[in-house]
Image 1 (cartoon, one colour):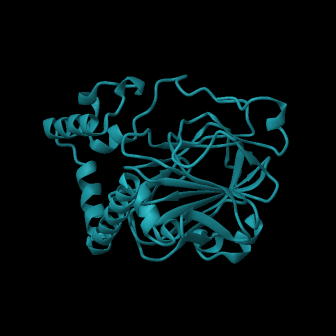
Image 2 (cartoon, rainbow, N blue to C red):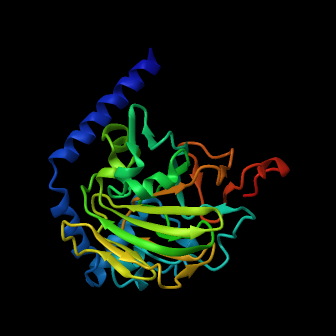
Image 3 (cartoon, rainbow, N blue to C red):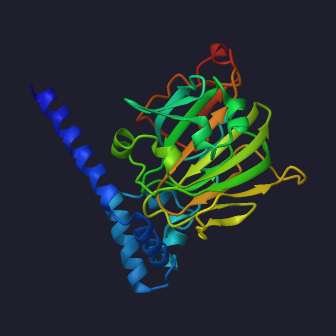
Amino acid sequence: MARHFCQDYRYVSDRLAVLLQYLLPKQLLTSLAGRLASARAGSLTTTAIRRFVARYQVDMSEAADPDIASYPTFNAFFTRALRPGLRPLADAAAICPVDGAVSQLGPIERDQIFQAKGHHYSTTALLGGDAQLAARFQDGQFATIYLSPRDYHRIHMPCDGRLLRMEHVPGALFSVNPATARGVPGLFARNERVVCLFETPLGPMALVLVGATIVGSMSTVWHGQVNPPRTGQPRRWDYQNQQITLRRGEEMGRFLLGSTVVMLFQNGAVEFNTDWAPARSVRLGEAMAQMPGLWAAGPAPH
């Protein structure tokens, strides 16, 4: 009986949280949060950071600069660097690109990606309506990782890659926490996102940065800040005639406030770490995937 009560309570709580998000002026809140996060407000900024650290139990001992008072803006704190050597890279074909928690992972069923019980979305929708690109990931593999507010918010390369193109896809700004993933259909294909396509030793890889409520902006190392501006229209950059290459583990982008990363691999390219499962905490650099058949050679490195 107690179990049923807990399930019913979570269901009602999730529904209320999602309903509130439909009603909130998400674009306005996100714009306001972005301005506040970039403000140099001296002691007020330091106080806000201290409260955030306490509220979300941020481990500042991992930061390259653990002194809260040294950050001139909230954005500078939020995109803080880690201490060198803190996240060693596992011996794997693809490493975890972020600190966070697994939302979902597994096979793409034709063109359908599993979001949560009762919810799927298509690769075409995720990739901004590009059916030709989506076809390259037909029956492939996907991994979705959620970054909470307490996490390190730089994104790194899972494997070596040459950048082919980037697209900013406008969209909604729902929260991307687990409750919202359970309650908003097609969440990751509805929210604003930045789609990055790479050519890698594993074949084509799409690395999608998904925005959310209060996520003031997303940026990449080759472009800088992608959003804002928010023009309401898709924007695409073609890099096929440029040699922009990034090594495994190298930083590729940043979130300002928490969000989600979705990765797509082609059919037969990878097998995920068998220790990975929804809600599991993961860290940058740990083994995420190997080429098919290589996990049998020994235990997954961490």
